[in-house]
Length: 636
Image (cartoon, helix red, strand yellow):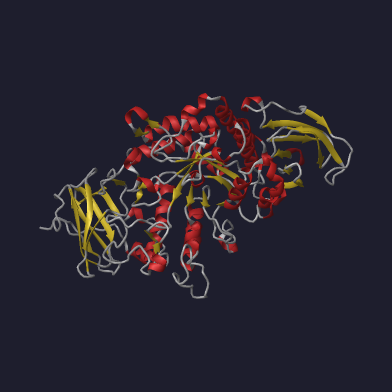
């Protein structure tokens, strides 16, 4: 009698959808599922291996012996191998031993759809299920308003392994510990969302999680899958949205991973010019293969459905869009129209976003994309890729380059500061100061600030204040919120001891107040992607290195006046043209003493004068503090 009972979770319709690339819930069918067949409890296994001659489940239940539990191949040419193994249950470890038709190659693979993986460096899959009872109904019911593009969206980017460590035990915090400490901290800091660098299982710590092998399993480094759900649940109960980094751009060549899965190029493109990434020494998905497309879209849907994620930040989109990305002349092949665009990848991303927003209209997909490829965040039906937002890499590059200059030279580089506004509304932009900006010798954001100690911290406060009042949403990498001095090290912990020093505590207080300002004033978020929500007052005062602008809500009374002084010289008096008369009231000053600034401030309320300035008939004289940002309300 066979040790495997013939059984299937696939209907003919499922198989047809899979082969057509239109099955977006494959995790309900593939992988290992604890079920009861003929009154006997056990586990059903299903894996896609069309080039296999035989597929055997090996595990701790059969002493890892090939041939004890051979799966059955379906008759329909789908390449699906499946079967039910009695008495195998939760916690059993396993892999697939695959013998290929290609030269009898034998591979030993982890389950691509496993819900749990062994703790690295172990590489087996684990049969798993949980009956977690979510407690975030209130958040889920109203999250559409929290995740809308006209809502405050201030993101704290976190690498779970190095946010905070138990130094005495030389370990990272667990999911449950993070549910206490990380959630309380984000709530205190007033961020609206957290973005978690990849939490899907990955074998190599220095990849930071960006080279995945367990696409459907939260990494076991910090606990069990249901404990990760506790973390997400707790964040939601504290009104904090959860964005997950998601990596459909490439995957590692580890022997137990997706590469050369059944002895053939199954998941990766067979042409190395399209299937191998030279920068990361990794493999690239074959976006033109229907079954691979179904796998990836099902994976995106899985995290949104099963783990209540509020969005996906899609990594390395530029590398997917272009066939010549990081390739030398002759190292790539043009598409059928002679262009450099990867048409299969573009079609995949459009289909991904169409399905995500159809199933979850209250989430966001965010593209990390660094080129001028058009309409990344425009709807698919209008010809766009369909993302909700796109990282504003140009703003990040130009602004960091500008603030790194000694203030005396900034007058010659005003365009670096103002150029972003020439294209700010071509996409739904998120302004990122991300992990990529504090690694590989770049130093921390704090370390780039010029001048003496006071000036460096004032510069940092000015940068953040400019960022939060610039159109768009915001993202700040952990540690930047209190002025971490050292470059980020994934093996260590943030330098929390710095908060005993007033300057660092001042930066932290500033971020709290900027988040509160952003959330409390509609002019900063209602039209953050709309050109009608922004108006320059003056962008050309390069002699003083001062810029000023208006942020607008739906009503004129909601408007805010912002002025930034990028030199350590106070501008007093400084005349500012205004759109109408009334009373100007200061509501924010980055030079306030509570942030360890100089405390130089203007009057709390100023009457507008009938004097022409900046091309306007109304104006006022104010005091602009050194390396400072002021924000005012203007009431008639």
